Length: 454
Image (tube, rainbow, N blue to C red; front, side, top):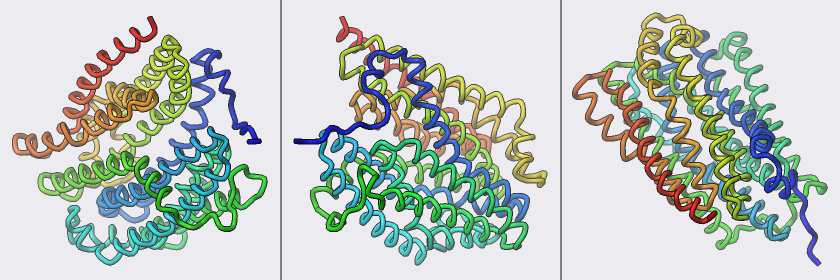
């Protein structure tokens, strides 16, 4: 007789409780976790900007594409494995979930080591290809050397934290994320200002924070009282499980890889038309935009179980209600980000640096890049909505339209017309175009949903 698995939250509530109350209940922990994770970038840039200098911020911005590639491999395993664990637990297959856990650990270890060593060997030519100059290369190189040495811990921490959340411990997953942020927040200023270790100190603080997170998740899965935990004999890689993990996580891998390509093109364009300070300015702007986007993604994570459950139950009015509330919440967040960028860009940029040229570049770029941010919330939520109702192809297509279909052509065309301003404008042009396409696809799909309900 199979044991019934009781995870946190009530499925019955998902079909009966008010959607607004459910959205808050499920979103708040996710928002705390996603926003806290994005603070890594902001914390590093603020301390590096004041403790090392403006060129260090530019050097750090150059590492975005490489960091995205590393994250792509980790997300492929983490997202794929966590989705499979949820499915197995829903099928009351505890043994299957344990096998997936073991395979995910081994995959993270192997990929973490291989990717880390591979990038270390070719680090300098990689950074030059991403737009590094003789002035910014030393900072980017020093930072990434430390990060790559700790890459295996980053993969294990992120992968197992995802599985912890999907196996019924969202509170523990959130706590682990907050602990890693706190460790980074304490160690970064100590290493940069106290020990005078510069950008290497910032990187070391990040790696030690990730190691702390790794210790937390490994301890959780080492305890017998954890519903899914490590067991002898379950760490052996199985071809069928690996194939399924990769197939499910591939969409996340592709999206992060595309993001890496886009950021590379942006950095190369900025280097050509604006120089190192323009790259540093984009690093500042991107870290702020990412924080706002992570809050919206937190709302998405809260929406997904509500929409998914009610869509499966045929309760279309509740699906639409939850979706509409999430659009309102997400759009409110991005509108707030837009207002901050338009009215307080100098204050935001000054938090990162005292260099006047970098501040000026950041002010101009921030106002232009985020000018279409009010519609970005709608686009992000809608892409996630399609994923929540099982239409992954729509979700992937809409997510990639901004990066591939609209942004890359804009970045290749507009700078030839308006120089540096054209680089900045390429991003809002892509935001508006992808949001318009998303609206058209949504209207078509909503008509189908309403027909199903009738």
